[in-house]
Structures are given as structure tokens and as C-alpha cells.
Length: 268
Image 1 (cartoon, one colour):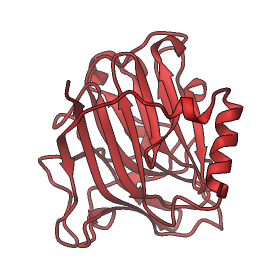
Image 2: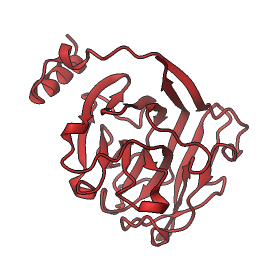
Image 3: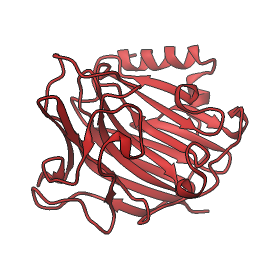
Image 4: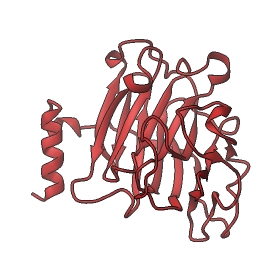
């Protein structure tokens, strides 16, 4: 048994279930309904029919004491010509720019499999994420709209990611969350697939098709707010409550490289 399998077995044992039981998943017949393979020419912006932007600073609506200003400049968000989209965090003196793209108003879905194959940045104070927000956010605000963090990473811990949900009564530091760590590798050195499979009763979290967390409706000590469409977000934040501030050990520029994003529906 190799080191990774031993690590996973230990992790699952600590969670109080057997590895074989935890990985016995209900059969699903998935149908691809939306995707972006990012096959544009080098320097191109992402497809405007699929992605839009959050622009400006944390004071413009997302808070968290983040330091960056989000832009739609090709310096911060563009294709690399090799089939990837690259979000780049740049430092200029004491200022930072980065990118935050979203499908809000363009594509939203309730339930299904949402996945992205990507390689993260690293370094203290960097906060890359692939996540979903309820499409009713403008009507009911956060966290009533619901939030599903498929993947977020603290740059100072490049071997570990977290999957979380936020809702009324369990948001911010009280989110329902679990970490997944690589025993002998880092998420910035090669690509990994981060996914959720979501239905009326549960949300499963995967890394490279390994199920490391299941959150069921009954696990939520509060309102289950995951029965309506959500849209997707990809971003690289700099600083913020979750990661702290960059240090002299944080190299810039830093890139999150995304090979693809795909969404599926279950077919009965």
C-alpha cells in the first residue's frame, strides 16, 4: 500500500467510517450541459458568452479585508494559448491586482456535477478559489443565498484545500468545512480535478474523483439553502481574513491555471 492510500485510509478512519463504505457511491449517469475548455489564442480574454467579471476592490461588495483590485485586463486574466485560462495576481509596490470571473446571469444551475481541472498559485497571503453562489443573492443577500466552496486554498499551505458550505447560521468562520491534504505533493505543482456532486439531499466533495466529504441535509444545523440555481466563480484573492497578508516570502506574480470547467446534469 503506497503512502497516499495509507494517508487516505487514516483520514477516513479518523472521520469514523471505513474507506470502502465511504467510496461506495450511488451510480450516476452524467450528461455534460456546459463547459469551457479555454482553447483561445494567447492573450485572449475568456468567452464573454460564458464569463463576466467582478471588478474593483473589496470595498465594492465582497469584503474579507482583501488587498487586491480585480480587473478584466489581459495581464490578470487571459488564455495562455496552450488550452488554459490563467488568472494572475500581480504586485506593484504596495498594490495588488488580480481577477475574479463568474457565470452570473449567463449560466446558473441547481444540482449536478461541477468540476474544474486547475493548478493553484502558492505563497503566504494568496487565496485561490473555485466556488458557487446562489443566483438569488441580489434578492436575499449572503449567506441566505447559499455558498458552496468547491475548492479554496491558503497559499501558505499549498498541500491542502478545503471544501465548505455557507448558509444562514453557519457562515464565515462557522461554515461547514473539511480539509483534504496531499501527503507528498502540492496543489501548485501539477493539475488536479476539484468537483462537487450535488442533489436535493446532499453535496459530495471530490479531489481527483476521491470523495473526501459528504454534507447531507440533516447535517446542517440551520436552513438548507441549496435547492435553487447557483452560478460559478473563479478567483485569486490577495490577503483577507482566511489567509492573512502576503509576506516577503510571497513570490509575485502568481498564477492559477485552469484547464477546463465542466458542468453535468444527472440523467435518470
